[in-house]
Every structure is written in C-alpha cells, then in structure tokens.
Length: 162
Image 1 (cartoon, rainbow, N blue to C red):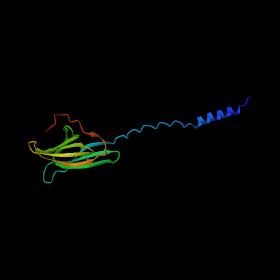
Image 2 (image 1 turned 30 degrees about the horizontal axis):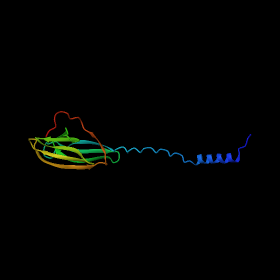
Image 3 (image 1 turned 90 degrees about the vertical axis):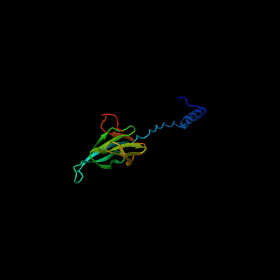
Image 4 (image 1 turned 120 degrees about the horizontal axis):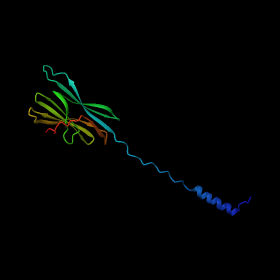
C-alpha cells in the first residue's frame, strides 16, 4: 500500500474543500399561479304573493339571489309587482331581465354588471308598452374581479323588446 505524499494530501484537501465549499444551486421556486377568480352565481326568483286586498289581482315578489363561496347565499328584494312575473330576453349588455304585467300595464327589470356591482333597473310601462319611468331598484356588491355565472332559462322566442 502506497501512502500519499504530503503535497498530494494538501492538493487533495484543497480540491475537496473547493468542492464542498461550493454553494448548492438554489431550487427553482414554483411559479405562483394567480388565485382562481371567485365565481358568483346569479339568479332571479319569482314568488307568488297573496292578491292585493279587495282585488283579484295576482302579485309576484321578485328577488335576486347571488351565491359565492366566500359569502354564501344572499337574497335581495327587488319588489312586489301586480301581475305575473317571468324571465324576459335580456337586451344587449344585460345579464338577465324580467317582466311583470297585469291588465295592460307593467314593469321590466334589467340586471347588468357595473364594475364590481350588479345593478337592477326598473322600466315602468304604460298600457301601450311605452316607458313611463326608469330608475335603479338595487345595487349589490361583488367580490373584486368576480366572474358571473348567470342562471336563467333560454328565452329565444323573439327579438328583444324596446
């Protein structure tokens, strides 16, 4: 068995020290993916109400329901209307629409997004379907950047009404 010379030992120790002293490559950190956007489900709900006292006029309560994983389910009153209410074909830029009519008069509700809010407006209509008044009914807040999943039946029965 042959022993190493003192100079070979010094060389070997220096080489091992250089290798052992090297810093390991840092592990690549995983790329942080953006968080999944919050998805808010929106739906209109129609509830039959008792007739107005002394009349035979049916009445319908209209509610906007929004559901998201952070806040759970919220129900917002939009109003109680004379007549029967149902989904209507939304106009361009609107998410949903509803119409309520009785004896030739009625109302049309439009639901649309404005930034991080959902806005509901009401058009009050006369017997000829002409616009009498338009006003905001309600506004509800959304989580910032939320995506909307609108739950409404297909209403492809004809062109949108004006």
